[in-house]
Image (cartoon, rainbow, N blue to C red; front, top):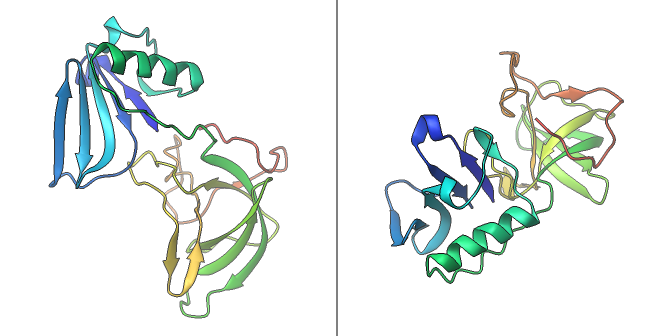
Amino acid sequence: MQAFYNKQGIGDVLLLAIKQGDRHSIKEERFGDVVRITDKDELVGYNIFRASEYLKITTAGKVQVDEEFVGKIRDIFRQNNLEDALDVDLTPKFVVGFVKEKEKHSNADKLSVCQVDLGDETVQIVCGAPNVDAGQKVVVAKVGAIMPSGLEIKAGNLRGEDSFGMICSQKELGLPNAPEEKGIYVLDDSYKVGQVFES
């Protein structure tokens, strides 16, 4: 789950994004100050109106989601007679990875199949960046991550090869002054494999 708040830009509304939905088939159900948003009966998020009356949020933009924050959201749900359980995976979704192996994709000239060490596991990721190579430290968006663009990272299969995450560029991470040329963000050796990447 990701949380966003911008009182100046959209008003006193806390946005909770669970997963990506199709804006053409979204349904909303209101419970007091909380709106549950679904797409084809799958939960995609919540909007909490009059958020400043429930929470003290001092930032504009992305809000840190931790166990304490989730507890407060559950309290808001109870106060508004919403009985949703709100099971949230709080494991980090953007981490430093190490490209252990890179092989050319057998069915696509511009794709590479990479084995990436995330510290606690090694995953296969299909990557289209021209500068990806074995021996690099990179930023990995794990399955379940929601990119700044709103794109949800899912496990997939690209031309016959399974892929479990995405090796990110600076632009995809929404970093300031990101280069325009295509390519992943290669990190220096000061980063530790498996550490959370903070943008």
